[in-house]
Length: 424
Length: 79
Image (cartoon, rainbow over all chains, first blue to last red; front, side, top):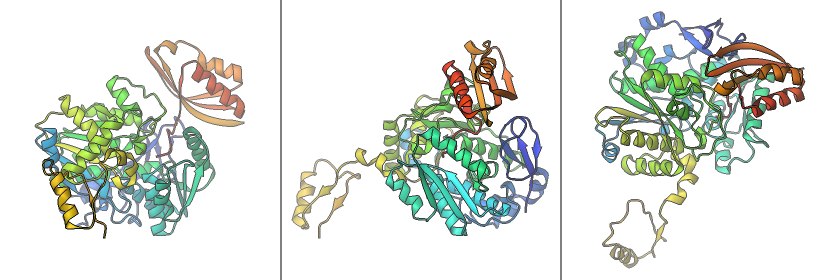
């Protein structure tokens, strides 16, 4: 395998060899992987795909490895669920959930990008991988580095909640809490990345890492029998996922897997950290950096690295953007759980909360196919919803006590949100 | 001497102001322009700044106070 020609500057188009590079040395534009699509077209066909394992690696020609992947072998190919109950609740005809809350191994879409980044880091001969993260990225780097025996350095703000620390610490990485504000952590990590010969997955490996997100787009297309939805709602933090999903659709068009791309992409962000959505709504070319203030911590990036490209993808597709407030995020998390049995993290709440508003505003029509990208698992952000749930009903360990409870609730059906605890 | 790569965005009301020159002169910073787009409504500059650490901090603060949007070129790295 290996269909990568090299790297290319997204701004000036200058070409670079496929090495550990991430910015153009002339214009400081970010670099992107450049593929040999003519060769890919000969190899990657619908027939060839039929016999391949159901993981993200079935599209390996369109991912930037020169050798076979070495980690994350079971990542991707998450369910695309026809969400009829949620569709009824939203008053739309055809709705799908792309459910990366069950991605392997760490229950978020980050497993896609980290699988690519660490496999590529091994190709480059690194023995240490690193990242700066407050959540899902840290979990995935820690887990996948552990699975392939690489050393991992993970940098987090020192005041991060203990739950998030545990779900990285369990994999035994070098977890370092930095005592400083968000900007200081950002700056220190950039300095560390330039000084140490480590594979910093979202800095010096970024051009390769980001390509992993495309697999989500390929899967959606294939799971819809090579037909794209008319509308897709994607949560945005750094802006890379939405950019790469749109790119994946364009690549499938180039390879004749699908007809002309006619999908509008919508950017969903949390109110209080919506620099991309603000630029979309203001029809501005400027993405103003801001200090994030949202419960959707996994989307809280005030200065999105790929913000301009996300903006460009939304505009070229004819899409739009919408924010979800903290309350709307929580309501959306509950709605998804109640209707489809899927417990998503706050980012998923942002996607559904924003989609609901876009539908109500008639920006997304009710009679056309819609896909919502759910990118992470609710077990990771339980603190966000715990106060919005009803309390526990307690009874004595006797049938009489249970029946008393039933009787008391005769006129109000037992809520599906309530849990009954038995004392034995 | 230290180096810093920054992206400066000048909104409409600042496009005509020679702020980059003023910063360079006042804080003894050498700006090296790598990418630029200036229209009637917006100015965007990607610069490599070279100078003493403290001067770079002061120079960037000067631009921010003047209303220029100053961003790191690689964006936020905490994801």
